[in-house]
Length: 373
Image (cartoon, rainbow, N blue to C red; front, side):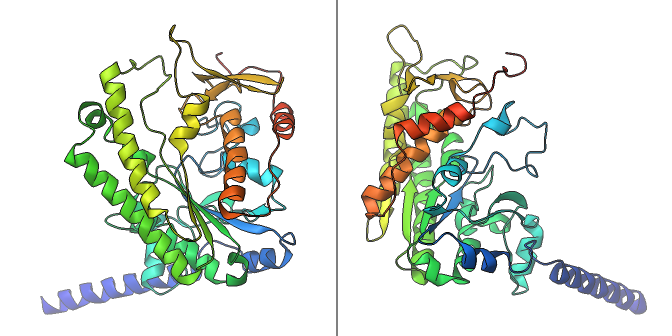
């Protein structure tokens, strides 16, 4: 019996040793020298821009997470539909550099094991995106620092490890933290009923605490890196015809709850090299209400396109069929972010003008309609 136990223990030890060896040899998924070579060849005077976030920032052109033919993100016209960071890369990469487009990362369990072994975890999950974009679809506030069950996909510590390799670049760098929508959407029913609910306060405190911890971590290593914290839009206005619009009372409750959540994020984004982007106010100024006849509001992009607060994969809809931002929304959002970074941090950025934005959107319009439309 003892021999059997010894044999089993030996087999387990050998198995673990093999796993450790494989994980160590496998690497973090990035080709050697990629980050260093880019840092050396980045456009002169450019500022690196990194992202911590969820599907609101995960690049649509990622063909690993979203294989060709998949409409999960970016919609049926995905090759002409871009996330906001993809817009910035096309219009302002000489000034705001998100890094090269790379296939990088490992499964969450592998990244976590590598960290336990004292090795570089890289990025998790594996995806095709800009080097400094750590956002991934489905991320929640627990994935900012890796609290609770979020260790496998934690973003801030792994981003800081990447920044540490070239600290001189990040003295003038920018980090955008845009996360919390998934946590907030998960308590929608409570928001409708009671905006002062202790359950909502718990979610608010947790997300604000995780963002604050990320800020402290980044500034402990890179004290002059600018950090822009983005608020959540909330759920008061939903153009989907498949879901009933909330009552006036429910709308007021949803708005009050979201205001409290955003106040907490604004509070942790107060201080040197910090700023807050009020996404709810931004949305309300453009598509945030329906008129008296329950018609969607609209935004004109020059004379190129009239965009309504409706659902669909074609570019004249603000939101895609999967409820994520469409081409026009993201293009205007990128324009606003550049302006906000310039004004809040006094950065030498060239604003994205309305004519330039219209030309970019026009270049992505295709003479075909989305399948099924």
